[in-house]
Length: 307
Picture 1 (cartoon, rainbow, N blue to C red):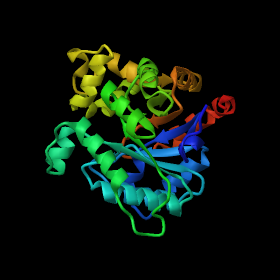
Picture 2: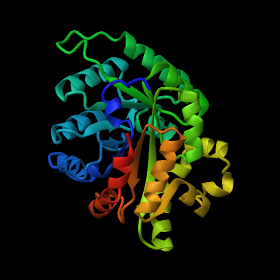
Picture 3: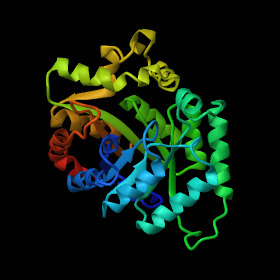
Picture 4: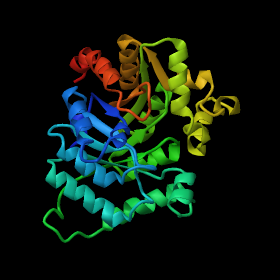
């Protein structure tokens, strides 16, 4: 088994956390969220870029507030800055914080690109390929110009997964099932495969569905996810706002720690190198600290079994 580029090798066989909850607190104190996640022994904090904070600035704050935690963007929007700015920021962050930053890149979604940023959303596969090529050609005349960094791309469909294998260090998948993980592994070959998995720990069926529907509300309106779900066997009846119960059950694990652990192990067995859990708490705008701790406490045996 060949080693990955640092820090992806650090993440191999580990469980991280995916969250945007740090954006619900003031920036000068949101590092406390990173410290909390680090204290719970998660290996990484993955976070998105959409309507909130600029991702590379946020990464710097989160890295500053932690000492061992890997900070990963899931994703940095390629329409948000040019390739030169992105690659040079990744070099600076890794040089400053001892190779703890993972640059996750994505093409985002048409509403976020056109309505929010004023760009034209077209040929996303070509846009990503050209962006990666521009990063490779980008100059840097600073001390850290030779600093290594790693990049993964958000990928769902086969062509983007193949691009991740060809032109990046791997891929980051989101809102997928175990069968998708197995299919992704066959396409990315030996490259890194990081899988996001949403979970609701405990609670009855009614509360699970409330949290699940709330979580899926925006995603069911985005064609990139609908297209991937169609490939996975879902249809228009599942794409009602907030998702059908069938979609909720497939995308979000509900149960005790043993149930969550089994899904993690299933992803690893299917080929995932790293699983990042998105813990859905009672309020999407508040860090779900209690549920984070419950999930973390139940992961100890999983961590000991991973290589």
